[in-house]
Image (cartoon, rainbow, N blue to C red; front, side, top):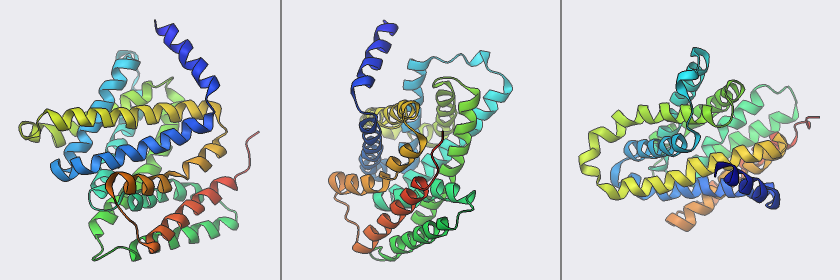
Length: 290
């Protein structure tokens, strides 16, 4: 049965353009974020984020079935640190989404991988992208209606830092694990962090509706999103992958408007465009790997 499923997946992957896989992953990630906002407003970001991680870990454990007893201390430590970083990134991101428009949060969060890409660069042209990104942040905060939610922007910035760390740690975990075992173990650690913090204290007041809805959202992201991204990375040149991922802020703006009716001001839209262009320019200017 497993071989039949694998064969079907391989055949389907050969027919569908890899670009479409990645665009789908981007849209699913932002759709899941937008769908989570009403639940965050009703039950709190900590509880909803914890449910998301628990569902994601449970679904991946069912599919991957990793053999934890066969793992050595080095791999367990790497996956554990990644899991803590994943939990921190998720808690900060959804806390920010509960206070700011989704498009604004994703644009600020994108500064994490962008800063990581610029940090090791010695090219003069990258100064332009850094300035453009800084201009984007200024426009995003300047264009906020009413009083600036400093806590919301703080959570978004913390999520950006965690995302940069997540990228570095994922590369390390990818070197010491095969398949999705590292991802499954790290999400399991993140779920264990969220269980006593966000779920157990509020379990009696939750009810089954938000639990089941978050299960469906977790299936969209991170389960389907991460799976599609991993499949794309196996078939796509990393530079092209990075260019397409620069669509994330724009996708977040679209989903925020379609699902939640969130409208960004012209200044905020300009800030989002600046961040996306800075990311696009940084990635596109990298030399191709031969």
